Length: 270
Image (cartoon, rainbow, N blue to C red; front, side, top):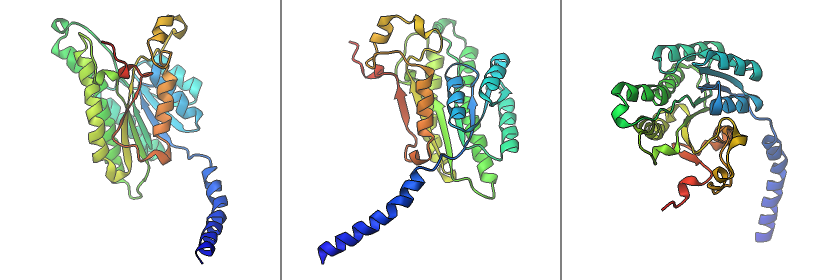
C-alpha cells in the first residue's frame, strides 16, 4: 500500500511538471525603472543593462550633454535634474508617475566623491556631499511610498537598490563626507526595507569596491593582481548585480548590503 501511495504521488508530480516548466520559461515582465545619476559611469551601465533586458527606463543626471547622449543611444528617457535639488527631484518623479502610472524599480546611484583634509573641508562641503549621496535616496523612496499609498489598485512588486560603497566600513584620511554618506546609505537601506514592506517593496544596497569607469586598458597588472578575483571591477559588474536583485523571484533578499569588490574587503593587509 505504501509503495502504491508513493507511485501515485510521483505520477501527480510528473503531471504537474509541464505546466511548471512552461511557467519557468515565460519571458520576464517589463518593469518601469528609474535611475538617478544615469548619464555616465556605473549609472550608465545600469541604464543600459535594464534597457537591454527589455525594461522601460528613465534616468536623471545633472550633466545634460551626457544625459541626452546616453538617452539617445539607449532609447531611454532623460530628465535634467540635480538630485541635491529636492523640488526638482520630486517633480521629476511626479512626471514619471504621470506618464507611466507607477515606478517598479528605483536605483539610487547618483553620487560624488570629494576628498580633502578635514581642516580644509567646510561644514558646507560636508553637507553638499550628503545632499547628493544620501538625501536623494530618502526622497525617491519617500515619493514612491506616498504614490503607492494613494493607489486604489496596489502594485505588488517593488525594488529599491541603493548604491553604497565599501567605504561604509573602511576609510582613508580626508574622506569624512563620503564615508558618512555611504554609511548613511547602508543604514538607511535596512530602515527603508522595514518601512516599505507594506507596499511589497524590497530595499537593498550594493557596495562597490574599485570600479574603473574609464581607461580600463590603462590599468597596471599590479592593479588587477591585488584583487583576489584577479581584476579591477567594471561598471557592468554592478549593473548585473542590480538586475539580479530586481528579479521577481528574489524578493527574499531584503534589507541587505551586497559587497561587489573582487574580494578586497576580505583580504588581510597587515
